[in-house]
Length: 275
Length: 262
Image (cartoon, rainbow over all chains, first blue to last red; front, side, top):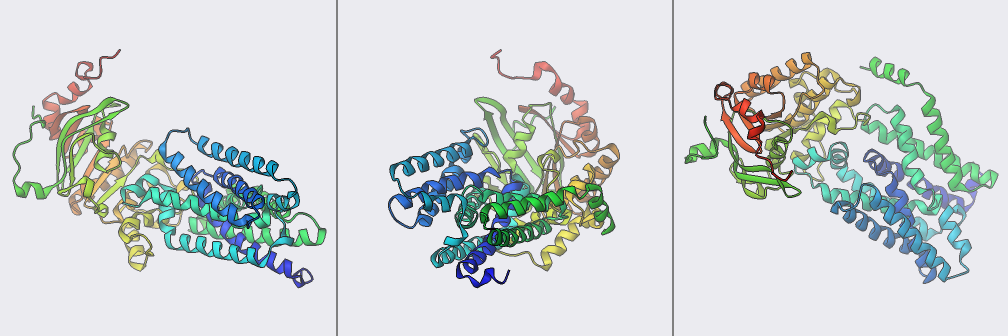
């Protein structure tokens, strides 16, 4: 553990990982409970198109990913809000569309395969100081937004219609939440990779749902699971020299597995006992 | 039979005590009229039951009052303000159909009730001690204070319904709007539920509007009935509704003035 922290790149990777480990499950709780788990996957594929464009035009790929995923977020909300497409079809349109654009851009410019791979699968060894600043800035934006609007986000997640009757601006908040997912995807992609970011939003949340006794618990437990997965995954990745993104997600799945075998009845009894 | 299609001239005093004022309201789904020229005034302190067969437009009418649907014609006024410019939603509490929520949602009864204070507290402001106290009060009124830390999904249907009433009460509303509140609730819990509504109406002077298809129970509980079948067939006391034959008329096929397309 201490040996790994003597390397500058590992310090940066761990700092970035901890920020991601906090942000991803907080946003994840809201999207899982709103049955929008696929939205993170969709926006990460749209972000890939931005990464490809960034690499093609030799600009900062993270900026490309950020622009693409924000445009994607607005597009998804518009298409969902219009009600013209059936349920998750809007997400499928953007997921495949984003990926198609990315593939075309990749085929246009040959020779950036290694760079692209680091975005697809994550690469802790390449987190630059600039990446770290971007991750922290985006992370603080997401944290501030949720900190300020958490009661409204809870209200629209639990019962959108009742929130609307109270005068809560539901459409604006839906758009905001999708935008926050877009930011989260971009900040997570450096570490876990585009193809695995949605796992970091979804898996800690469903683990927390197995054991939590209220909403506040759910958020804290999800964050805790995610941080444990990030630190354990990175440590394993460093010493065994395996891909960090995969290791982190496997650790998160391991925690989910443990939570899943705790019998439901015992939890029910716990609730009864604490009353 | 008293037809409310013709509204008598109202004085200023009447208008102040009129909480909900529907004036020739209509609404269509996919080109088919489901609410036709409904004019209805709900006075402060009323306990109004809106009844009608399936597809009679009663839930649609409720959603129009709540601002969830926009009328095609006519006007809606809440507390004397036109709905299009009405912002004072804390005065309105809404209890939706129980089926509307996800039973595995990880929220305690208390958290659900607290969410009822969102509109009052406003964007960007945090809940404080006062909000918590009011949420606890609301739970107390419905007799659920002891269950406040339990997961909403672990409560019985009747208890869940009372938590949703507490959420609606948390903003201190003058008008409580309930959509088919007893669906899936057992008989004993239903009795508790109606006695709670009677108390709210009597002691706290809360105006109640309740939509239901359960005519027999509703007619017994409410002080006013509105019989709806696309148009408003009757509005008055339950006794008059029965005596005038409005209830039978509402369910008679000949009164179903639906489209002649088939």
